[in-house]
Image 1 (tube, rainbow, N blue to C red):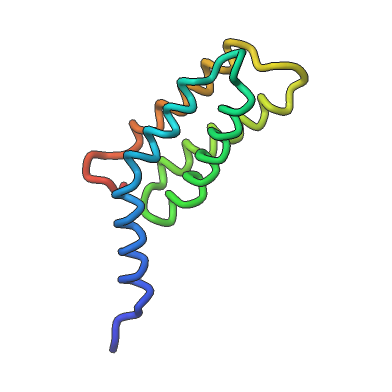
Image 2: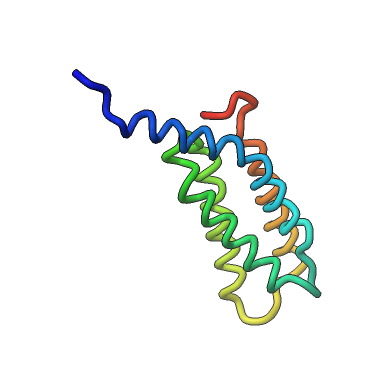
Length: 112
C-alpha cells in the first residue's frame, strides 16, 4: 500500500514551523515587552495576531501545550480589550507574563 502524500507534506510544514518558531516567539515577546500605557493599542493588536496564529497552527503540528497557552493568552487579551478604558498596569504585566511564558512550553527537541 502506498504512503499518503499528506504525511510527508505535513512533515515539511511542521519542519518549517519548527524552524521559524524561535523568530516568531522573539517577535511575539518583543510586542509583549513593548506594552505600555502609551503604546498599548498597536502592540496589543500585533500581539493578538501573533497569539491567534500560534493558537491555531501549533497544535496540529505537534505543539499542543504551546497552542493551548497561546489560546489562553489570546482570550485574556480579548477580555482586556473588551473592558472600558485603557488596560491597567497589572493587565499589561499579566499579558507580558503570559506571552513570555510561551517559550517554556517548547521543549528543546521541538515537538511535544
